[in-house]
Length: 178
Image (cartoon, rainbow, N blue to C red):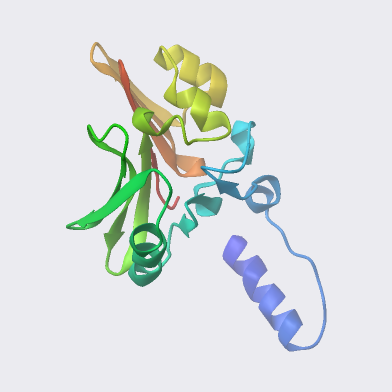
């Protein structure tokens, strides 16, 4: 449906007509820069509109490296290791706090974890400080599917394009294209 709508829009614009076309998911979702925007409603989150310091899913490797490594981000050390561009907190470099995965020249995954909580805005700031999988469900709503065991929980919000891994004190959020 989404592709059909975009084709119809392209045809109308090409013919000189105008028309506003939106799908339910795109109409609801808002742009969400993880370090700036204060998106609080889980239904407003769509991984295609999420960005990390300006890098979005689908961006080229050149753009991602330029924005994350070549441009200096205050308090952040960035380095490329294999297929990942990792962001480290300069004041406490115990592990990567966020980053992106680059496959076939494109950004295919954005991840953040609880070390990134002091830089995160919006609902994911509260997700990264949650004390239980139940608290995460209260914030984000029921997951599309998941798995919970004694070690933790994997909450997959596939329709919105993100996955929350709750492992006790460690919480990771991965954004992928739905």
